[in-house]
Image (cartoon, rainbow, N blue to C red; front, side, top):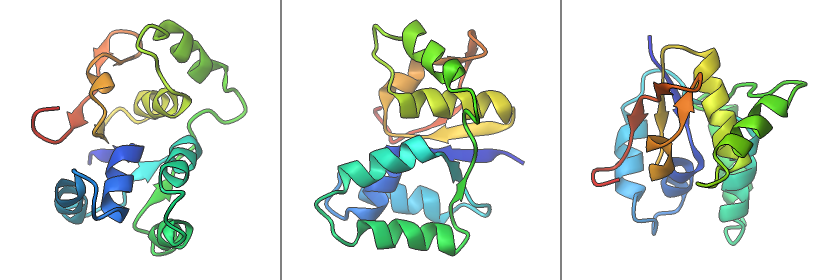
Length: 139
C-alpha cells in the first residue's frame, strides 16, 4: 500500500476554491481510499497561506477530526536531519516543510508526495533516490 504524503499546495488548493489547482486537488484527493499524511511544518505553511480565510483553521481541523488527514512525525526530537537537507539544497532553496516531507518519504519507503511544487523534482531521499510524485500536468 502506497502512503500519500501531502504538501501544502494541494491542501491550500483544496480549501481555496479560487486556487488554480483547486479542481485537480479535489479530484486527486477525492480518489484516495486511505488518509494521506502530512506534518506540522506543512500544517503551519497551509495556515499561513490561508490566513485571510477566517474559516481555514476550522476546515483544516475538520480534515483531521474526520480522519481524512493524519499527522506523521517528520523529525521527532532531532530536527537536525531536516535542517541538514535544507543546507544541502540551499541553492534551491528548500523550506523546512519540504525537508520534513522528504524525511517522511525516507521513513515510509512506499510513499508518494502529492505536491504542486516543482522543486520536488530536484530533491532526493536518502541522497540519491528520486521521490515518487503526483503533480498537476505541466509541473
